[in-house]
Length: 440
Image 1 (cartoon, rainbow, N blue to C red):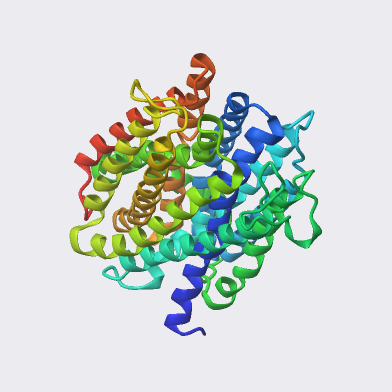
Image 2 (cartoon, one colour):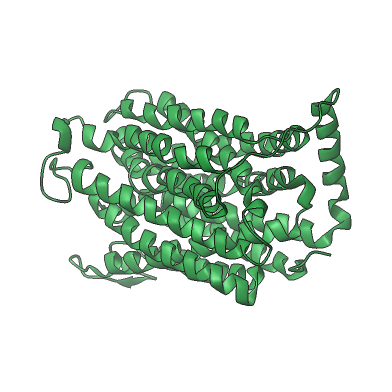
């Protein structure tokens, strides 16, 4: 039996192992590379990316609660986690074949969607183990520390990519050298290696989790346990109108987490398409955001413990609304209608600042959201609860990327495409009014 310290560290290592999918693939390296190089057109690439995120979100909305309920009825979570980890590894590794100016990009989008589905589903089972990591007074700190550790891992992986592999249009990495290991810069093998590197990173650093974190004991065998679990899930869903606090929180998080994921998912594409940043420049943007996210997540966990999860979530949403407004109002040539000089670096500096607050507020928001869900949920059906939490995060997951894609297509502007996110953040903020920190 692993010691309590090793158990907690093993659990937090999941965040370290999984974060590069968000940092390297969804936000800072692969997404802008896909849009600007694989597709070759920023507007079309953003629209295709939004469609892919929408489809994955719909799949997750249905699958999360069902698998969570079945897992609660059986007990052990590691077998499920192993299954979805395999999807993560296969899906990320396959991005190696995303060559520049492909004739058909649907295969790459499908491969990415497989990996993303595995990553998101694995979080349900890991989050459900959080209550076993400590007392109720400790879980906010553990959750915050886990997110902070994850962002540090994402930062280190991003440094490795930028310094050694990801090349710009001239075929040079951030150090000014050709990609390491003899990779061909002309066919962008350096940048494409982000898929296999992310895959290997996860496979290696998940070993402590599987070795040190004890699994839930198997339930006594019961006939039709899966059917019983789904029946109980339906009962839980029907009872939500009587639990105003939990229901309000799930709907609130549905909107604000959807908007946050869209900001993450399109941030690199915006920097590439609107400001013309190269992959290494976008990586620096990611480093700034990652450092802020690690710091905010760590101190946010302590703020959560002192002021409560709801207060941290509220402050984070307000910061993200301001960030979104600034992004919409800024382009290479103007700032909210005020013309800028052709050689002005003001848009670049402003986006770096926005990146810091986006990373910081986003990290605190996710850590405190996870903690608040633990406090509101039925302790005996925690995986089902996080399945519903995943449903809340994905039931409208088609909405934010879909709206961004539609607004981008209709207006022909990547900046205006972000406008619907402000509305989603505001809806989430208003619904927090009915959330009681300790439930009903």
